[in-house]
Length: 223
Image (cartoon, rainbow, N blue to C red; front, side):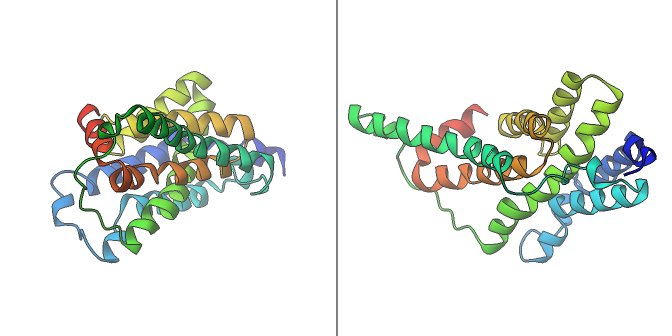
């Protein structure tokens, strides 16, 4: 790797152009006319948009791999960190659930079922496209670009807020995810742990809807 490639900046201009394109396509006036069902809706989805934006910026800026977080091998200790961090809330939730069962407060969790039938398209978006495209774009490009221009703390907070905004406004789930994943990236210098954590985190809502509908209603009401 040459000194020139090592010092090459990601640049905020291309990122701003990408966000402008996102705001033009995925806004309250355009979204209703976009395909909502079928595989065409996958191709015209925010996840594919961010993946294409990532490819475009990497090509336009001629960025080396070291600049977008995939230079570390995908398996090993770093990957296990992302896996264990993602699984921890599930084990914690099961422990709390068992405690509530023992003390007879299971109605806080259970209740009338919520009709929910995930499709292959849902699995593709939640567990593959979203972790891949969003981590590449937000943590592979946006976070390092902000960090190059501002402080690390500002970059973590700003990238998390922008990530949350890209998910439809003030939502606590995307905000927390947006705060944790850049910290994982800082610790491991790799996007793989964040991708694993992101993919596992995306299972939380389907699991709540299926097994703990009352808890899901309460969380939805709060946030």
